[in-house]
Image (cartoon, rainbow, N blue to C red; front, side, top):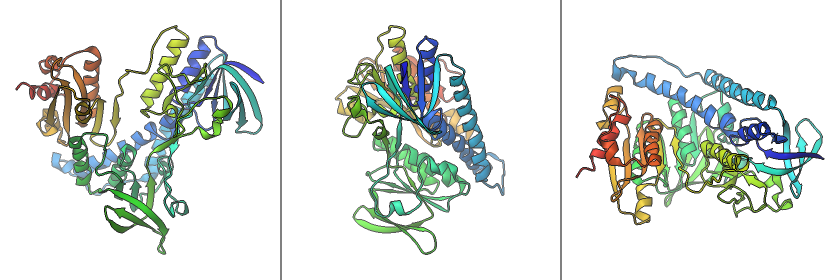
Length: 461
């Protein structure tokens, strides 16, 4: 059995930097990865999808360039080229991460699947055959989530797609049916509509994006419908069947009606579940919740001292930047002797539809639920000078502020570079800058962020 100071299971956006940092701090460290270095973000998530979103944006701009006096006719979408570009970017990032790990002293990289066999002991089934037994003083679990496959009759009998397998398509689907109107479903739906697919999105709730305020969700829905994306709310697929013409017949419960849809491809985007089954956590006593997520405290430590869970596997916000911040918390606490916790950290996020939806802090619905004394500032993008000049006035800005202290409590920016603009407000929130100061702040003209002046001027009355 090999003994280590630190064992890290999963080479994701928390595992890789943590492994290098611990090794450089003199800890004998091993990083175990069953698939690819980089985790979901690099291989199946952020990097490949945003690369393809850029291609979809180029197609959209070409189709709408005539409004700017540029006539582009006869452009085509080449999925093979799009996929090849995506693959090259992913491979460069993956290989760069792996080389950095392999070049780090005191750090071993093992490709295989880890299973607990006892108190801080692991058995790793190596990808190239054989097994290794390990134990460690510290163990960090960063194995992430995977696509949840709903129990729908006939689904397992069709060649359905997931957010991973859809990245390997080399032909544009004729008709893509998406189960789930969440962030993943909406990004892929708009992307493939722009590539030329007919797209239908099924959302079981009464509206898209139920976690967002109604005006924001409604604006997103309006934008997607303007691109001829069919959105069915209060809709659930109940049966899939292979049709004689090679297509897929889907039976949908839509409200109190039952309808049938014929499609060529089905994308399952109905949520994600933790990859904890193979770990055999019961062998080491680590507690999980009823969904299989690992329970942790504010310092990201499990109920077993010395065992930590980082990233998506612990539940909560499933974002790359949260996983990365998890690493910084445990490293600074364990090595630098700090006392950081994850309790009150900001949780920004961005949905990379076009335009983007950038979010930080609480929504209006949450402010109302908490009984806060708040004000709401809104500004349509059609009143933003930069948006008018660029020729894209879709979306809106919205901010929730404390009526007494004038502190910004939350914001949503649905517009071009919405993720960048909302970051300005996040910095203000973290720095304690009140909305009245932003109202008269001098921003460069004409930028999108400059319109934060106008956003907060709506609160003068």
